[in-house]
Length: 227
Length: 245
Image (cartoon, rainbow over all chains, first blue to last red; front, side):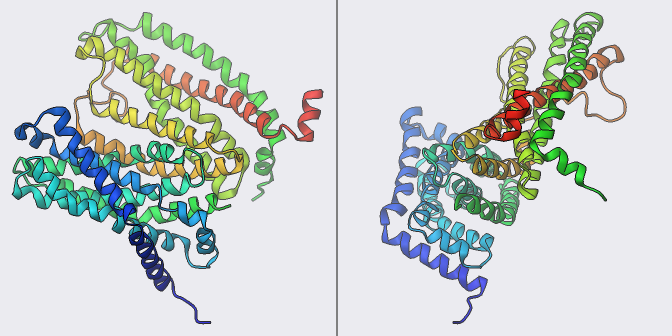
């Protein structure tokens, strides 16, 4: 039997997760629909004036994307735990932190990337000028990345708990508030015609930090949950 | 180096007895110092030239805010020790500290609101320190909620420990991001090195209260730790002997 290297294992796991996710299209579409609906609630609640919506667009986009991505986090490890695949992964002898990173990356591709692709359309609907769309896409892309990394820790910790999804939001939301601050500020700056560079760079730094440290926390949490 | 004393302390029967013996040594000085600090702060200290008597709430507010962060740090260090060296007593310390820390956070927030009313004309402002204190409260509540949702105490210990460590890594990020987000709050009076911006007769009661709150935390922690040990070791033989005595 030939041995599989850690990189190969990561690639296999990533592909497996994508195949599984795209066989259940509802899993991909539900967060997206949720994102569209939450961002529709704001114009309905606040009034249809584009000038007003434009000044709130950063916050609306970010809150919508955070909640939608949070919704998707719930299935990250749950089905794997239910069918025993998670235990096999832990017993496979591959570094669990790297496997966790691969699972997080797959989750971002399934849950985060559609939100990123949808964000410019929703931004236009909220009156964001074309010149700011680049900042919107970058900000949501970095933000959903951070949420996938930090959220996976929460998902691993609450795995197998009753009412786990509510608890998951309680655990994860305070930890991603810094990302919300800078992400929404980047969009606001771009909408006002300023440079969004500073907040975007800070957001990117947070993403790098989260990608570096989160896999170890996810691995530790998975080991605890799989006992 | 001989580490047996540490293992001895980490065993529940010894910790139970030592905590019981230490509690009054923390409790009584805390009681006396809180009395002295309150007398100094509320009676002896002169009123502030700008804020009048309203500033006196600082004697509860600032030590509470300091304790809320100090206890989170204590909790995270204890949780990390428990997770790394698998010392159950350290997990018990973390579990016993969390509600105390959360309550100090509530105290800091509510005294801050009471102070804000006369000073800023509003109960709540979305300023940096109030907001980061609020997020700290969310972190405490998350830790307590996560722990309480496990039936298995061992899993609760270790899952809570991972969360506490993640939180403590995040805490400076949260603090600075919230600080940059909004800076309306007056600059801190204590952390400034060199000469403090408070005059001496206002400062000593504040430091006394801070020290007293630390001692109070020590006393409450000892009592709560005993309760934790009682709950964890309720079937142990030593406990039956200890209580039957």
